[in-house]
Amino acid sequence: MRKDLQPGEQVIVVTRPQPRKLIFPVAVFILVPAVGAFASAWIVRGEPARLFPLISKEWTFWLVAACVAAVAWILLGYCLPRVLRWQATRYVLTNRRIVARYGMLRRRDQQISLVSIRHVGVSQSLLQRIFRSGNISLDTGHGEDSVVPDVPEVLRFRNFVLEAMDDLPPGVVPEADGWMDPGGDAARHETWHMREGGRDER
Image 1 (cartoon, one colour):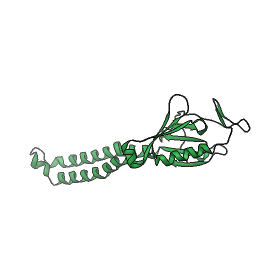
Image 2: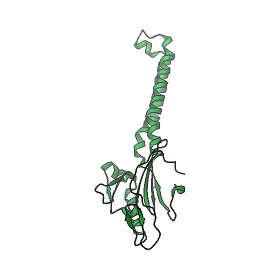
Image 3: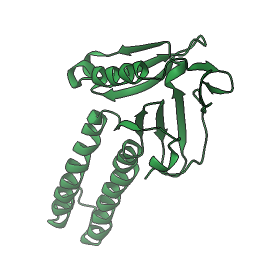
Image 4: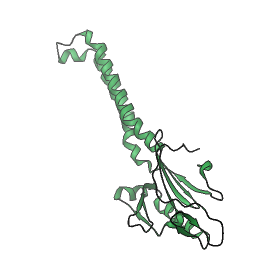
């Protein structure tokens, strides 16, 4: 992120979505191998042949291989993508803008300048209140709020945003093509935008 900072810009907070979404994938990651190992041992002991006499010992290898393949498919197809998706998502607050970055191979960025924000709202479901997370909504006056979902310590994050907005230089006003300071240098202003294929953060 530091290499993407504008002159005079400083990082205030870097965080990721609330990790409660990893609870079920982590539980699956622990339980599925245990179930697979138990099933493989059950097969090796010849228990399937007692239930189904048509199953011979020649089936043992293929049944164990099927168990291993099922475990690998669940871990690689379900658990790993969700962990990587969470790991690749970052919310960055600087003294000039909020940046939300998603994805590893295919990057997707959302950015909004603090100077264009008119209102900062917080919404929480019951589960989010338990984990002290929530959704940050940013009103830029264009008729539709921009939302940063599932921010951890959402009330604290909102306070950081409000403090950063209060610390903006006086006289800075949003323009259609950029930051504009009538008495100083012009700086770039980026409203929410989407782009694919951006570079990884450092």
